[in-house]
Amino acid sequence: MKKISLILSGGGARGIAHIGVINYLESKGYVIENVAGTSMGAIVGAIYSAGKLKEFENFLLNLDAKTIIKLLDFSLNRPGIIEGKKILKKLKEFLPVDSIEKLNKNFLCIATDLYNQKELVWKSGDLLTAVHSSFAIPFVFDPVQFQEKFLVDGGVVNNIPLNHINCELMTVAVCANASIGMDILPPDILQPQKKYKEKKSIIETYLNKFLKKKKDEKSPGYYDILDQTLHLMIEQNSKNIINNYPPDYLIEIPRKIAGTFDFLKARQLIKAGEYLAEKAIP
Image (cartoon, rainbow, N blue to C red; front, side, top):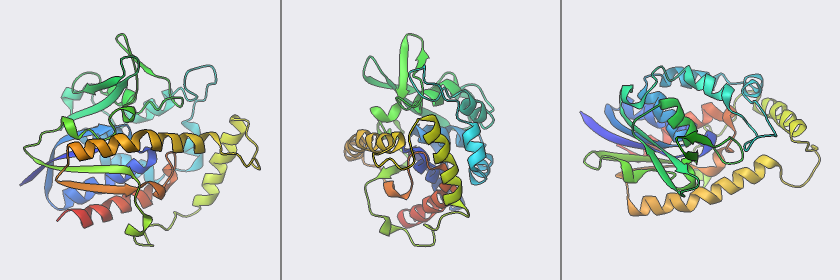
């Protein structure tokens, strides 16, 4: 029995590739004992630890523009432009237990304590609050108030929490926002899903209408700026953590495979995760 610790980074939609990595590891007989995640890595890690990953995978594979738009509860009078209640309600369907202690795996996730400027490590306590705080991207979602703290996305301080896992087991880390070339993936994986452009256009039209941006404007849109800013923010801290706490195996998902909010590429991302895991791990 090959027991491992699995570390899953943030990276927005790119983190859907974590599902493919987990699928590959389990198909090869690896037993994932410990799971640590940040942001999207926290979402996938928690759902996997709750035994609901297959249901979540099916949900992502069947996403369409209408479903995504229904999950966006916009508000311009709050710290974040998306309140997030609808997303949390949907996530709750895949998190049937209320506390981290009740999960099937040893799980932890990372949030950022905004005013104390340090990481907060969730190893126990309310599961949905922990996951919510880990993916609360600044300016997109409201900070999560916990006790006297205000928490935001863990990727601000620790995008790939290798420093918090059991080093006695083999460690596998997945970095879903890596600055590597797309040539590591075969062309068939990069083929978009059916009607991808049409579905993406529907979402962009809706967002542009809400954000008061005309389609023909040449300046970068809100999400373009946010995507680039998030990448710059987390890239260096990911490199530092990997250098200081090198895993036994590192699987890197190219940043350019998808945008931070490109959840319509779920099928490609899961296949990419499976392919890259097979290349990296015997």
